[in-house]
Image 1 (cartoon, rainbow, N blue to C red):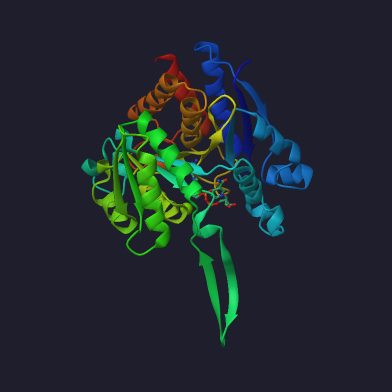
Image 2 (cartoon, helix red, strand yellow):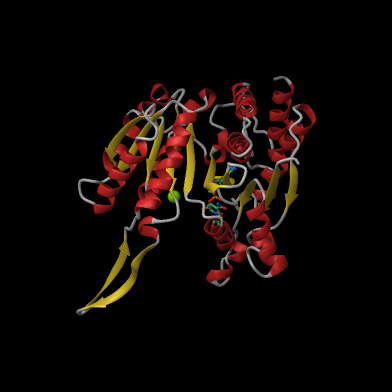
Length: 365
Ligand code: NAI
Ligand code: MG
């Protein structure tokens, strides 16, 4: 059977950027013999409008069965006043939780044509290609006890940074596997100098590293890591870190490379029967209500998320390279959606025109 893909376009610009990805998927089917069993369903506000919940049980069940899920974005002002449990974001959180997606991959890749967009000097970021692996299901965002409690005559807000060995081990293993597919270089970041969870993190990562003798492993305190990311990001290849540090470090790394409209992500879980991990791919950006429905959205983040799916769920690394090269070519040719403008005298293209340009570049590849 063909590999299966569940598409959840969601809200706002989600369906607009996903329509462009559909063209790319069709192109690979028609030209590279890569056929997918594609099904499409609702998530977020779009699901609430039809089912009264942000993710229907049948959709959740489908997500558990397919080889990969590709999601657009969820949310919008229309749903701001909904009860917390019905908010569009809960649909996405339910997917992540029930699929147990513990490893969040956030690439920070600088396309040469966009190097001027970085908040850093061009030579610091030109050619940058790093990957941050963030543990996604544990740590201080989930640890108990948590809450706001009375203590004496005032209140105290409490969160608990908590990691079990097995939680650290599975995140570390997914980072080492990734390092093996890339340049065999991994830097683990924590604060073992002041945090017990950091001491355990370093110990477990070091132990897992014994199974990957080819990978050059280093450790860095996360605060120094933040500094090094901005000072000399090209010293890194794969970085693995916990949920909280990963949240901050990946946002920081993202801005090394320019627009939100360019950033893909993958969230991976445990291996399925076929040996590939459970996986959800999505752009980093949200539903962008300010530009939704105007044909202005940049589809590249979502297109590059599909490239990650080709690489990590469908074992099609060469085809992923082909798609990324097509994006690179389009950018080098000066094709720009409005979010990528800067230069004088460039007229922005629409979402559809950007998708068509990528397809044309694929045709020429
Ligand atoms: P956002 O990412 O939707 O937008 C931030 C800014 O970036 C806006 O000015 C937007 O126009 C621009 N932008 C985002 N993606 C773009 C693209 N592909 N092309 C061109 N410009 C783009 O974040 P915001 O405004 O904080 O949130 C809007 C809604 O999205 C909220 O309901 C929020 O909860 C939701 N959201 C959903 C996420 C998801 O589905 N994973 C992630 C972040 C926010
Ligand atoms: Mg964040």
